[in-house]
Length: 371
Ligand SMILES: [Zn+2]
Ligand SMILES: [Zn+2]
Image (cartoon, rainbow, N blue to C red; front, side, top):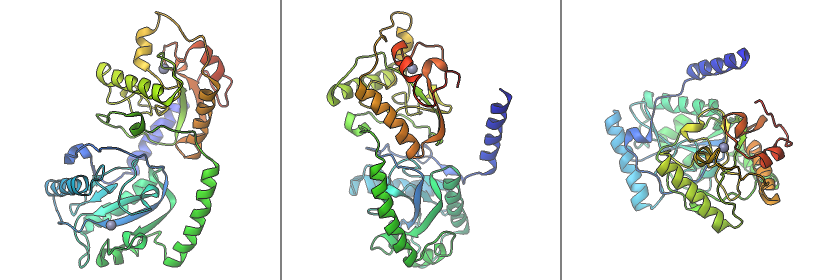
């Protein structure tokens, strides 16, 4: 018992030492909610540097105003679902959260889904950003590596290297081309060939069909707490609700669960993929999807003791989807290779995930009754 406590303490200390720059959250700068979000597969291999070509700013108030103006322009005029960049860097040395670490941006055509886009607030064709801004950007890159969103072997590029544009301006481009992990054009060509090959391999190691939030008609979350990945645990639940056998009926069921969690439980969102208050620590929880393994936690608690309908196992398609999802989580780097699989009843006083399903998962690889 003592050892895990020490490990937790140590990693908390390390997180403090390996600090990240001050990041002004979306709430803090007054962001509008995104229309939709597409999850970014992390860690990514590229950091792409931009400038906004707008006004410079030197205080949190003026930079926040500037960022809000850019979001309005991207959402109203460009009709994008949100501000395009993952992060913006102010002349005040603060970092402003755009789409953040976990969402695909709209900043470099054809590259946004495999990169983080950082944009300096201002026009840097003829002058370079403030020292505070340059330091913030360097620190943000290190932060992305430390937190596992960016590969250690990442490549730094300017927007003009990916698309026909003058971005990020001549002056800033000269600065970043001297930073670590900058790649020349020749190496870049080679790299693109390697990437083509790995894309082919990734297709072979495929994941199960995941019905996105947009596809099942999710409401946007009230708030989001980032999950630090890779996590160590997979926790299996059942919803204790209806079974479903088509995308339409399963989508209806998932929507009903989200409404219950958001309206009755007052949670910020549907309760799994690690974002609910109830599931802060260390759990890798399934993204809600079209098989009956998603959790309806609160409902489970209410129904507990009334009846136990869980005397049957999910169908073979659902069991295979769950196994494939676990492998997918490992492949994509969200779940440690050394993960532990367990049932909800092994970590909290509940009958979830039901006796029949529990017997099935207890025979799966890496299962532990006492995690
Ligand atoms: Zn750009
Ligand atoms: Zn449960």
